[in-house]
Length: 206
Image (cartoon, rainbow, N blue to C red; front, side):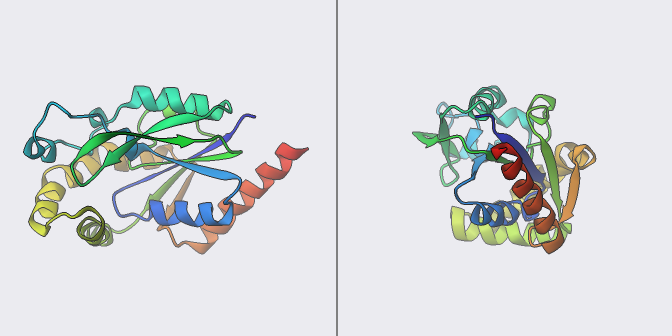
C-alpha cells in the first residue's frame, strides 16, 4: 500500500488542528495524522529554563531528518514509532507512539511546508490562515488550558520568537501551498478536501 499524503501548515492558532480533527472524524478508518510537533529535538542536556528559551518556531528546533525517514516509511506502507513530545516540560519523552499506515496520511505543523524534501512527499499541500489577533488569542487559551503555561511566559515567547519567526519561516510557505483556506471551520474548504479524499479512496480501490 502506498499512502496519499496531505500537508497542513499555517501559523500558531490558525485552525490547523481544528481542520485536521474534522477530517480525522470524517474518515476515522482511512486516515492517520502525524504531527510535526512531536519531532522537536530532545534537549536532555538543558535545564528547564534553558529549554523554555529555545526558539521552537525555527526549523532548526525540529528533527527533520528523523521525520523524513519515518514519513517515507509510513508512506510506503510500513509502521513507525513516532516520538512523543511533552509540552509541559519542553522536551521529548522516552516514549513512542506506534502509527500504522493508512490510505490517507495528514502531516500537520506550523512548518510542515518549510522543507522542500517534505513538500516533495506530499500530494496535496494546504495552508490555513487566520487573523493575527485571533491566532494569539487561541494560542493563549490553548497554552493556559492544555500546557500549563502562565500568561507572562506566553506573551514573552510570542513577542520574542513566535511572531517574528512566523513572518520569516511560516507565512512564506503560503505561496507553496496548493490550497489556502481561511480558518479550520471553513465549510467550503472542508467539503472540497473531503470530496477529494473520497475520490482518492475510491480510485485506490479500482
